[in-house]
Length: 298
Image (tube, helix red, strand yellow):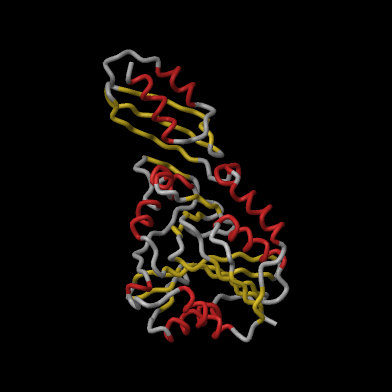
């Protein structure tokens, strides 16, 4: 019989780990719902620095999560409902049908876009991604219900860097919250109506919590978060006390491999020494700026 699971955790690392475990081990068709604390979730092959603003995220308690599947970067918080469908049948159409039919019952008329996004008057409230392996398929996505749009725009606004990336960039779209259309809509109501479309099913709880927690810790490991980022080149420019400073960097696996430092400061600086201090460090804009300021303040 079909299975229906709902996560009791808002920890984004735990929920992404649970999704991975379910994909690897499911036997019966399964629909899984989950919600996350504030985070930016990026695709497997995306450059986190190009997709998000780490300074804004740190200031607002927003975590970075790298998922196992492809697709673009998304901001999530408890105002967003995630859905994951595990099936042995190829094709996302049944899932999109359950979603659109359930939303219609709740007073929302939506259409499917060319990337399997769900739209209202051309504005996106749900995006999807997928993964498959030997006849096992995962189709998952998001439903924006009451997402904090200020955090969404702040966290997904890339730093104003001149960056040449070798990864995959997100496609930005105009977005809308479902509560903008139907103020009384909630995640619980959506789950109820989608479940009715999906059923009959057997409700259950997540299996193997200890295994999922181990996967969760691997997802939260900085090695996974940063080392999977594609190599990139970037130029940072700052106006400091003694003039304009420019740093050109070659970054691989989250570590600065090569650095060149330039400045129009009237003071004499040995920029080669500064560049050597940067090489071998993890790419972190706040740390780079701290090092430059030590010389600019002299």
